[in-house]
Figure 1 (cartoon, helix red, strand yellow):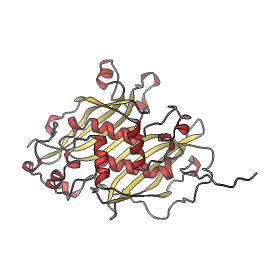
Figure 2: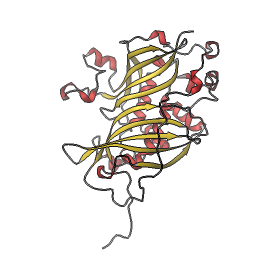
Figure 3: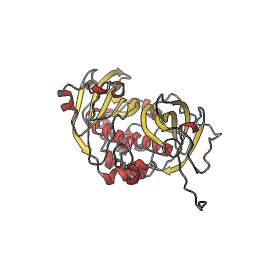
Length: 364
């Protein structure tokens, strides 16, 4: 008997990606102050420019900007519809940057360009490499990044509504890494003391094990998944998730990214002026509700930039259920790239790693 219905599916199998193809993602969302408040309540980030309108205006911005990791989560989630709803895993973050500020009231939309497609040597799977660009109303690029996803191979997504590659361009936002307003000299008297961590307090090799963790709640990770419009069922549909590696709903990576970075913020970003970029990021293991996340940072490089600012690059790592200090005390090589290690050397508690570059105030 012929079926009298259709059952649409989304995303793409490996064979459906073509290098150079552009996908204009259908999501379009206006970010309001409520979104900012909800994300702030979840991330607990100490960076003052994203929390205080007074502080942001003292730096020359017209208002407090939307947090960069809120923007990254929108960009990631918008792209799931076309890129990764059939994906097995998110493999890498590459060259994440935030060239312009985004404000409450801006409407966001995104597009992605396929940069590479490679079938794995074994199994019906392969890697799709895409660049996603997130824009506000006036074509401002407020976030752009590359990522690699592990995708199923062996066919095409059946009964997908028409979602062809676009003939419209998906141009990146140039080489800029921060708003032009932040190029001007600072007036320390208008900024206040901030938290710990001026530029002079950092030096290559310093390791900070951030003491406080955060336990992931089921309701929170699912609400944020919906808020950001991430449509991969692994994150919210229990029957689907039971067929996966964790046998339950898995927290999607962008949220883990945001929480780990925020756990580090009081010690490393309390005097940060802007997130200049993230690179070489990965999720070596998954996170589920009930796991407790911890963070550690290692200073990789410090470079003076101007009379009142410098640039600090950290290796940021996240662990689950065991504090980084305990792993280091046990001899773990916590800051080495996890995915390049031999199986016997891998740290099963390590769930996130990335290089993070931040514009930081010098001491007044």
